[in-house]
Length: 138
Length: 412
Image (cartoon, rainbow over all chains, first blue to last red; front, side):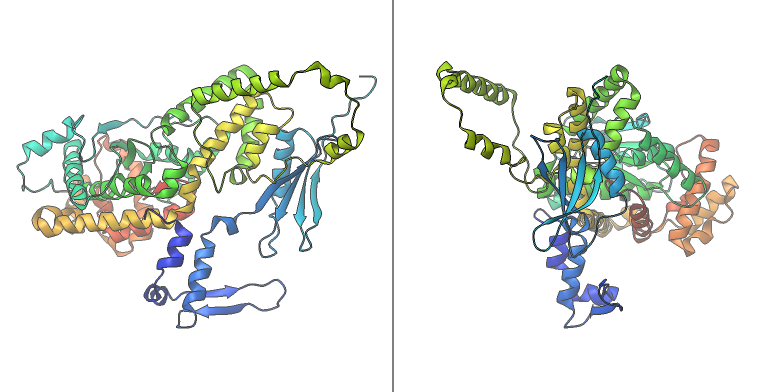
């Protein structure tokens, strides 16, 4: 109890007996394939995969998007760039636009989200413009 | 949203704490050692104290390390109130909590959901809120579950040790509440609301995942400030101004990244670096961030925390049953059907009570809705024996409640 959290606890202590009792199995839903695949069931060859899968489901790191502050254009327009590191090609949820709106409200200048591609470059996926330019006659 | 959960506070102390045990000692002393614990399904403050004392003794025998705890009995409405404020006894005001409260209330009134039997707060002393609709055996069960099970988990688990300071959280919440109320007064409700809305949206990406910054004491902080000033003073030298400018170095400077390393905690970054925020706005961001961080370990230990508490309430109750079969079988097994039916006929309001045991989970939801409608009419903190179900039943109903509720607080 002292040294575990959900993911590590499941990974270490989920027993074959319990897996059989719950009749656990894993389903692989891959967006590049047309069919679902049952990867593992509660048998000798599947215990390890089941345990790993279930423990990963409790891992907050894989459940929540990995968003990081990437850059601020200090000497330019002060825009804030976040970078999203996708986990298993999972895209950001639809609500990311609303969240971006809130972020822009706090930051006060343009904010944008990039997605990290496999080659290390960033691809812009959303931007909320927020310009503070004053007109001359104001 | 007002915190009004102080219906009948019943302060007790955990094992090993002699002070303030008056409420508990009285019934314990009145009852000779070995005498049976109070039976029946109606709870009273004395009966709960007696059970608490007995459970505490077993916990001490097992060497369970807990915070001191306080037990408070709350009504269904107060429980929904607590739901809305993620279980915290004091919380700042925000429209979303009221919305959450109304949604819960509507679902509860229509019988679409049952409420938790208790909520427990990770603080020192640990506060356990018990529902006043619970029967006496259920109260004993949830005391064992929450006041000792969850409590010891909060105290022992490394995540809670690392990320939360149980002794300071209530004070901090009180501070936060006052501060935000003050901001609302000074800068208008809407301005504060806009900041809080934004913070709540970013709460999940506003936590430190890997390290906790060490505590800065006031002396250390002033010392750091002074050192900084001294350093700046030491750098002042008019000669530097006469040096010719290094153009290439300036260009290098322009290319420097900010932040030098990516930052995962968005709210922290905003609090420290957002260019346009006023100081009070930064403080509001900080409050939201700190409270979000406080709940972070709870989200990581849902299975373990609940499992640990269930293991202990089961173990403790069966221990009691072994050593004192006659007295404690009451707290561990179903209340005799006869008592249910007797109560039913006596009150003449729930003809269907005995059939409820057939499908415990669904029935609990319906039952609690019915109970709520009759609660005010009775005007006494008694409860019909509808929840005299087995521990397994309560766990079942509980896990559903938990699954459907916000996942940040511990409920049983």
